[in-house]
Image (cartoon, rainbow over all chains, first blue to last red; front, side, top):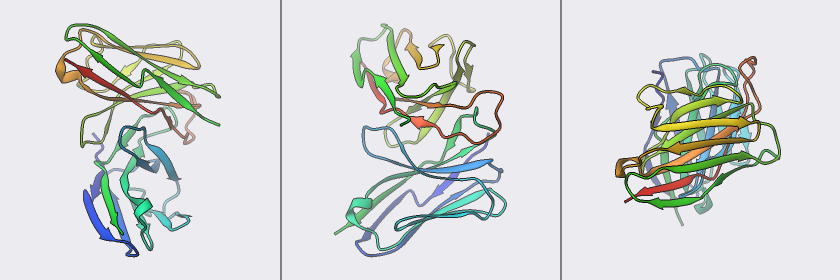
Length: 112
Length: 120
């Protein structure tokens, strides 16, 4: 079983601060995806990283895929209350026909 | 584009009854659909993978006779929870992708809004 360790599980910070969420595994993934999930809803895709060392930016969010494609990070700059939510990383084991292995998620609270 | 719907959005049933959950890709053809389960305060766990016209592949520990999956068309997959019990109460989420067994390209999975099942 390929596991994804996501940390921290809970994070509460003040508005304007920066934060980083980590997603680590001992296994290689063909791709890694980051999702955001609101209570009672399905996860919404934020980004997919495929190439080792790849960095993608989405406004104040920066996603990085490790060189060995075993780990990834999500960095949020100048966090805002609207960033509050559950962030999930998920790895794809093989190709497009494979299901996703999800990390346990990071519950993020941004206090105004 | 790439919208996935689920029906119903929530359901309450008595123990011992069966419940069917539908997952539809509204604006694309989904060769592959996936079913996940999410317990409170936990992450999503893959239950099974289904391809149109073939039998579903179940993850280890998931009872195929209890969770019946039918992927009858390229836009519809159904999950039937048979003889439901309170421990089956969970949030069931499907996803759909355009990719099939023959592709090794990364393919985005589009998630439905989920179905909250409560078994009394």
